[in-house]
View 1 (spheres, rainbow, N blue to C red):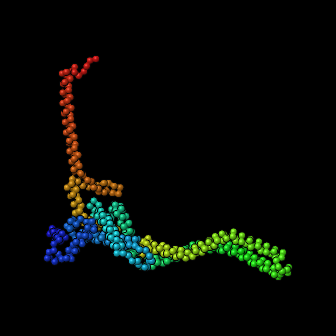
View 2: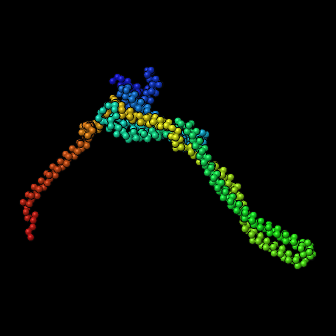
Length: 442
């Protein structure tokens, strides 16, 4: 009893006595031990009355739960940073604002607290059954009952391990991711060049057709203009007497040449007038195509810039996980390590023998039940797998209410019977004394 009181004074006292055991560091140790017990979901008031073995056991379990929450917080912070952080080249770090870092840290803290409380619930609801067995072996019943908790712990282990897995392998993942980004950028640029060149080829073909049409029309006009110059020279030669006729002056031959020259000039002028709108339209289209060709380099540069943005978007959590799994089995060992940390406390709680704390906790529960009129009884049940012990609960307050209600109804029945008997006797006597008032003759 003195030892228990000493423990209680040591763990509950907030004073600072001059005794050496109440030094600053021992106060820190006391508070930290209480925190670890809280992480384990243990009742501190009961645990203070237990032997050192139970206190160490729950401090160890609480330490694992606390480490799981701490790792979950780090994992969540890194996951927030990777998902919502700036994207760029894998091996080049981008500057981020202090506010963003604080937001990631806050998100990681919230996620760590969520995981910590889920683990506390899982651990506090895991343990030996109500049959009082203190065997350190995990029974089939315990394993079946623990499947939902094990499944939740397994999922939490997967979620926690993924961001930390890529953080641990960050350098190797960055190198592989940079190679993958560059390869993807080359593919995008090649696709851009192919698309631009195809469009440019179509424009060049259209431009060549227009150039040919313009050249054909201009060549025809030039040919006819030269023919007119030749005809004009013949007219001059005819007037000068240098033609085959040898006659000088403006004779019949000269008149014929002049008429022929006039017809050729009128035909050319007419054709040029009719072809000029078409020629202007072709020249306008040629200018538009030339301008479009000049803009293809600008369009190519914009596509290249967009390709860089697409390449930078590969710097994400999922992409890094894929690279991590492609690098070998290192990710598997990291995952198994975190699964062991997450699921270990559940199996430890199921494996450890029931100690003083567990019996005192059962005793406290039963005392609380008894104080509230609930009696727990154990009975044996024959089962195909063997005889099993099951708990049966009796609710005294409910039973008392039932009994009181039955008595009340019984008394009400007696009173009703007395009333009916008195009414019957009185009515019978009244009929005997005055029979004529109770029937009529027809």
